[in-house]
Length: 78
Image (cartoon, rainbow, N blue to C red; front, side, top):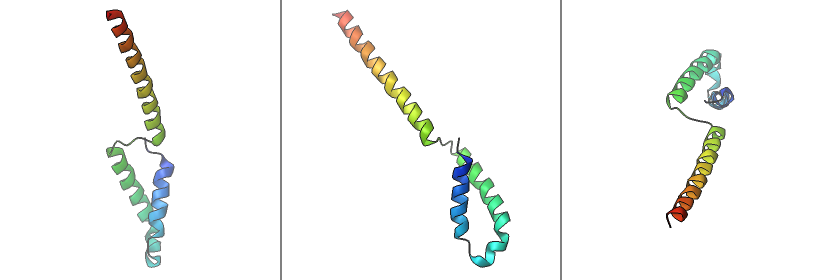
């Protein structure tokens, strides 16, 4: 799940690029952009770096256990 703070940070960076004469529409722009960004990122089914690292660690442990079991099986087959 994408963190709300990340979306806010992106919107703030884009907001800084809005020309001064359009700043009066800032609130509408902010709300619309937030809705579009949130929907787009959810559709992309992205994960945070933390979630990725957790899954990477689980996979590494599983791989190590599988390797150990394969080694044990080879020893038993001898």
